[in-house]
Image (cartoon, rainbow, N blue to C red; front, side):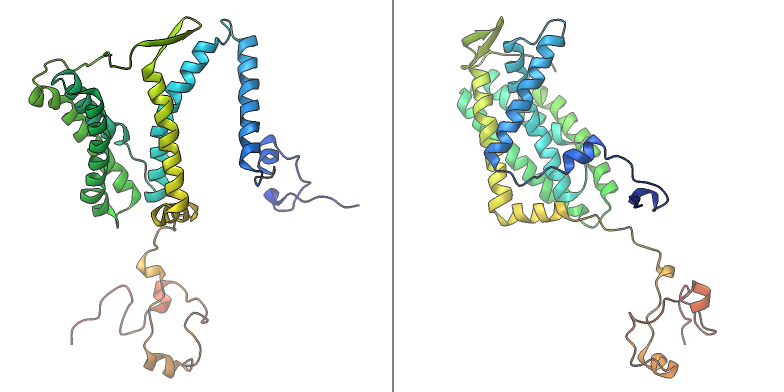
Length: 294
């Protein structure tokens, strides 16, 4: 009789039944992109149907469409967090502050100074790119050799700095005393259609048009450019283990010492691992203490 061995138990008992998560992971992932999109659309439709039947108020079409549009805009922030994590291996807590300072400036250019809406919108995009590049060059690269925890703490300080700038900027630059901007009308705020008593304006159309462009540009960058390929390679690599104490590493023996020991022809990597530090210390010199000057 053959008994299946469970690798997680070290071979001491029969194998347990695979979980649902393991079965999903075992599914083939080399399906064409249209097939994956079709499967995702079917799953979303099933979730919508379940919510429409089980929720007390149902799932109105307008509420679902509004959630998809606003959620896609929020997903761009998630894409930025994931991209920074895969490229630099730290969580950027200043992600929202980077967009908040520039977005508030662009909004006041349109509302307070009366600049044209397309010009303010374009300057907001360009300013966001410039601010991100400045933070990368002036702050992030200075912590290239630091631990990821230190860089995460630095992002917290950067978030506080940009948050203070966001508070002081309206009064110092635009002469506005109120800290809360609130909603405001744009040239695209006119009503286009209504679904389930929810009014949809041109602002929703702008989001629907901008999100695929940004996501497509990000996909093109990751697949076609050298920087994107480097980010993908970095994301697939496992993090390096923490460095050990210098005492845990064997000291490098001199050539003369190795010849006197009779192992001149044996590679250093092939030699047996030495014992603790005390066993490696000679009578005249210890690996943990520098030799006295002669």
